[in-house]
Image (cartoon, rainbow, N blue to C red; front, side, top):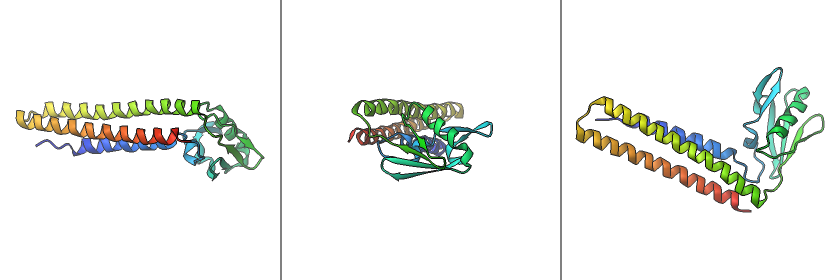
Length: 180
């Protein structure tokens, strides 16, 4: 009998990564995860923002960043400003960086949904890659034909189930993005 549990775990991992990516997509409300991709150049190397500062959402329209070392405040502000995908304009007062999160326009919402759809395709490709790995193992296992066909059908069902989960998560995120 063919054991597809490792492939199911791999697909669950793809789904988990996809959900993490969807959390990073901006929805018009300030959330610290919005800045999780920001890399700040400090001490001669690039480090994730959360390793050089504390990021909190003060309210729905404002993020506040408190650097662990106040000398890094300019580097933090410029790293956020340089990320054009976010479209944010931080300001600092010498102690903290404040990042106002402007409300999204209809055009910007559509652009964000379009960008998020590329993450959907990446996740689906990862699911299909797991399926291909399973099929390769099936062929090399030299199982009886009926067992092989049944196992292949199970892998295809898993693929279909996880692809539908990705589509549902994206549909929910799109609806969240498009509501004002």
